[in-house]
Image 1 (tube, helix red, strand yellow):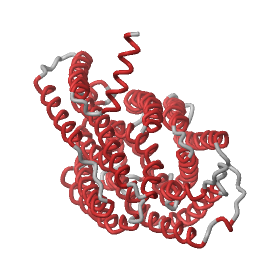
Image 2 (tube, rainbow, N blue to C red; image 1 turned 45 degrees about the horizontal axis):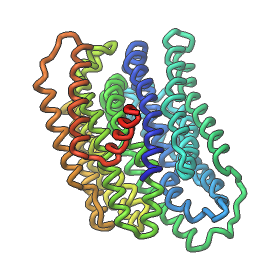
Image 3 (cartoon, one colour; image 1 turned 90 degrees about the vertical axis):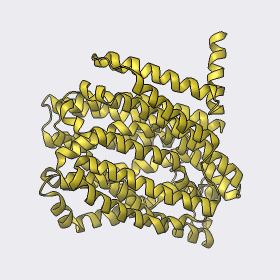
Length: 494
């Protein structure tokens, strides 16, 4: 667990610095200089390109972690692994870009009424997708080499700073709308190139490969796993982006912008889980390969506990200050329509960060194909819930639908993990942690509200944070956290 903690801390520190930059950008630049429709456009373009790239990956993000141990040799060579890491997404990009244009008419018909601006930029999505696709490939390679801090630096800090430049150039009329969209997409191209330069320094990027190295049995395993994972990704990736697309198509890009601002608030909840789950994945893969279920269970419970601990803490700080946040940001009265979207998306995100590592366990086990059986069911549930709730509750309906979808999907996933892998994330410490969150939320409700927004936010945040952190430490909820705190105290004493 030591390397997980070290790499996770580095990755999380970088990510939170990026989150702070993103916070300033989102709530004091985007909301001031861009209209909700323009924010919605950038978000829909990104999600459309991201959805295409997730399909075009052909399951590489997961299969690379599962099969990388088979390519490694004792002398450190990867036996052409990087070549295959590039080849499969290239094939996928050809297939799905062709499919994207084949479906041009039904896609544009869906958006033309309420989101005509997206239709205008329809052709900008494929190049955007290529940049996201190979950026993801280079990040996967970094993960396999157990290095996540620099890729996090690129994604969370450099990318955000470059986006600030793009926003300001548009805000001060240096760029027109077409120039802004081109600049926005180019930022991701630069990030992709930086990721490539990094992996070229830390690992082999040779395209030399030996077909004979891959045995018939290994080839069958790779093809079977990749095909199943790709089909499963079709459903899971559609579900994860369905809410925004349906808000944009049914309510318009302005509501998609409001939904995006709510989404940005909630996104910080999963920041720690990105680092913890990312660095834990190769370890889980090796443990499953060796059949060490005890090690898998211990890892699963620690990952879930720490992800909920930090994610729940962040959610608590957001929700106790939600009115203060909307009062401070430019045009807050417009974006406050998404207040309850924040609440329901956050609940869904907490379910996700607590149970999502189970998805990794299924992916790296011999039961990976079972994911197909409930993926399409969940896709149907998500579409049905959004179609039902958005017309009734408006933009909030999309948040409620997302929460219900997360609850159903992760419950089904955990049932599968329990039945097939014989493991679960439930522990006494996890139950205690949930109780602490409820207790501290009750403490917040007893605090008087000050009419000065900043003062109210600061004193409320300080009291709640001290209560929660003190209780977590005193009850020894996390041995790893207590060890780090004790070391810090000793350094201060010395």
